Length: 267
Image (cartoon, rainbow, N blue to C red):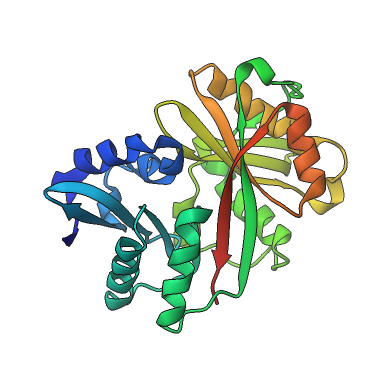
């Protein structure tokens, strides 16, 4: 049986997510980053004999579908329901075993990705950590939000000075951003975009094109790692399989590959 979950189901969602903690960090993190994630996210549960056996989440701020179920039948049911609800799809992000059937079911509804990136999930433990931070890195504040968005626009080839929207600002949690600045301008950054009891997941790693090749990405990532190791977490991050420089850089920090991931982007 499939049904939409409510705030009364929060503990049921978390109990399921923690059975596969490293696969469900975005789901777990949604309850950490927001006091009321049901306001903008839709959570679907699939139950068999009263037990939750599959979880589908639509992250409304990103138009992103993330599904976790071992059965293709359940994944198909989640996709069908989100399509029925007219949820616009911009991204599908999940471990490969969950993402591929999600993408195939969306195609049945005429929803075809523009781009599919194969990625690898990497894990860093404290004993393997090679710290490249210098102490110059700073934690973000609310005053940095627009500058963070502008850097992202530059990296995506968009106009750096285009107006910043309220939805874009709502996506940024500045306390989870680590920045490297030069003359007051952000030249490199990284953030935590997934978190759970035992892990913190790094994302949003970028260096301004004028400052690339100087090791600043390793520096900001190291600063995040050092901070979250002190909070008792291990660190994970995704890297595109064709991004050889990044793979080498993260390997030098001590990250090791552990699983396969898919990031699909839609028109």
